[in-house]
Length: 266
Ligand SMILES: NC(=O)c1ccc[n+]([C@@H]2O[C@H](COP(=O)([O-])OP(=O)(O)OC[C@H]3O[C@@H](n4cnc5c(N)ncnc54)[C@H](OP(=O)(O)O)[C@@H]3O)[C@@H](O)[C@H]2O)c1
Image (cartoon, rainbow, N blue to C red):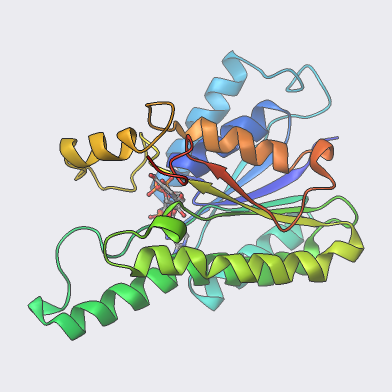
């Protein structure tokens, strides 16, 4: 049966690849992000690709691989509520929630006019908004719509929660998702809903580094893996698709490392 899959950050990078994987399997994907033009372009491209190369269960199977967009800032309560209102009215349920929206607010130009305290405040608040509030507010907004039993929630953490991220604030914001994920898994477990997270390492072909990843830094990140390569967005997407499948029904409250072994380190 076709599922309704809400993907925050679905317009780019890991979220976009996740939408591709679920839509090819015949699910309806709901892409959420702040930029409506980016969402629309992605939706058009995914729908076009689906029409040309349908998935195994796509138009020939039970599902239609429908792609829907909702523009919203889910770090804001009104944005999260807007997503809930639209999803509730149009589809009435959420079978899978993928919280991929996020990013590193400490990347790019230094904040706070060079004042260390201002800069720290800006980076820490920015990263908690970007990575914690986006995931928590959207999850709280949608939790009553989750299909029970069988519903799935997946968070996108990061290797930075284990190895740091340079400034501390990004990794700390990802680590903050872990106890929330665990408490949610405990709360929803009796209803047959699983809650898990993935922890990617360096993923190429996303907007995460805003085109500013220095070649030496990229080399270092790749050298930290045991298989000598960057992840593709589809590496992460396929793991999340498995976590959302009936086959993983006894897997909950877990953080799956999808980083080529880099979490263990070299
Ligand atoms: N790339 C990596 O190496 C890597 C490694 C580990 C973990 N991650 C994590 O993976 C997740 C996906 O990132 P990515 O690598 O795919 O980078 P990305 O291409 O920058 O994707 C992030 C997405 O989140 C959306 N977003 C950000 N803030 C939002 C908000 N407040 N409300 C709604 N949407 C928001 C962005 O769209 P809008 O700007 O249009 O809102 C964008 O589509 C993030 O949580 C990131 O921290 C990435």
